[in-house]
Length: 181
Image 1 (cartoon, one colour):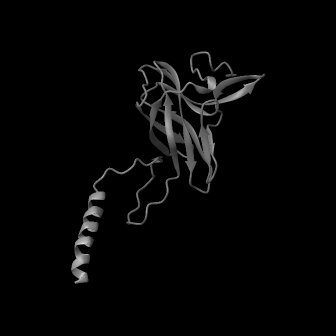
Image 2 (cartoon, helix red, strand yellow):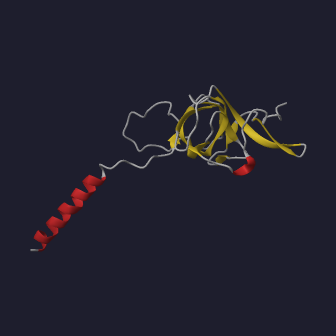
Image 3 (cartoon, helix red, strand yellow):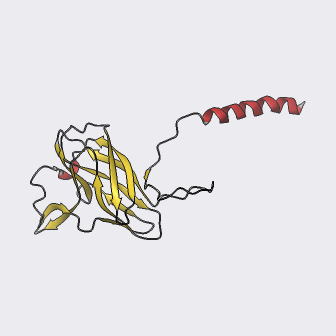
């Protein structure tokens, strides 16, 4: 008698579990492209480099910047040396530094170093990915693809979301990088 009562409940649970697998999964953080796929069905290793919460400041055209948090899961430092995106013909890795009491933007010599088992913040008023010559408007919610190139030749592909941002006195217009020496 007990077996008859449990069988319908087990059927309901099994059906619910099967239907749950049909839903769309939550988006995962962007990850570095692996050099080669393993030939066995071993558990997937954590990606060497990923980015969390990537976003791009909205703009009509001209200049803007991309931000997020780079995450290194390896035992060695990883350095990002360049970036590209179809949204911009020219992209530089930038930093904001104090130059004679004035905050200036300039290219980041050597790129962004992400420490072993650490993170590197890309944020307004600090390190960021600078997009120059943006020809089309970046609207809120826009999906902007990026590829970062690593010092070892590896790549990290991700999509950043367009986001309005008025804080930090960020302007990103021509002449803002006067600190270039």
